[in-house]
Image (cartoon, rainbow, N blue to C red; front, side, top):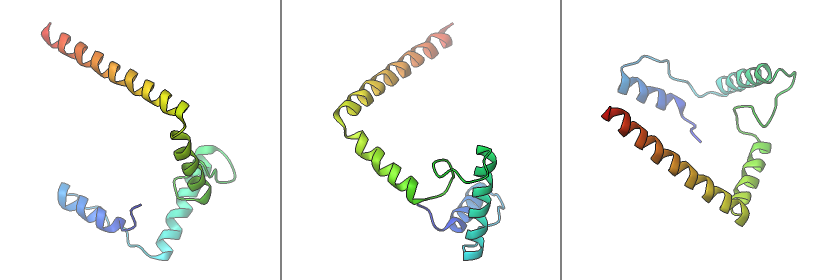
Length: 106
């Protein structure tokens, strides 16, 4: 988790010659950002309340879901499905590469 966004913005400004205003990490600014993030979630979800599984901020609910997903990933059945999905993905990349090579030869 990144906690010093001001430093990140300053690095971006130096690297790309931009002039974004760095975020000043104060309690007031953090509260304001979280309020905006929650407003955006309510608008995106078209609901009067925040949806903890979609809001773009940390929460205990999201942490518990993430931990459960980590446990799910070591399930042998899930591991086999992931291995199969990765093999299919690699095959698709290979086919795409072959198609690109063929189209440049024409």
